[in-house]
Length: 150
Image (cartoon, rainbow, N blue to C red; front, side):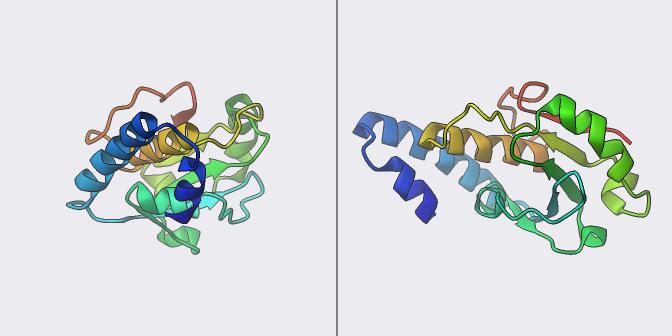
């Protein structure tokens, strides 16, 4: 959790406590759930390891082999949801179990958003909601990310 510790430096104690409580809630719930194999890809279907720590904290594990991934998250810095909706359909392979089970997720990278503790915790919450639908509802689906049906 070192990247979060770095982001927490300099925050007011009350803000640190609030963010830690949010992380603790996710951690407590996922403790009793199976880790979900997740492939994180860019729009060229290249593995993307930028979110490895966030995925792990949200109850997933990065899967290098897309055929074994239960979920596929398409994420590429600088790409909006509109960009991803336009580019991802051509990248999908119907042999992938995540495609067959409609477990494709498009994640927006708002290029104007800076990397802050608040944004990192929010992203972990969002990924937890993506991977464990029904167990988490944080309300950013449709805004920062969407489920994409093939």
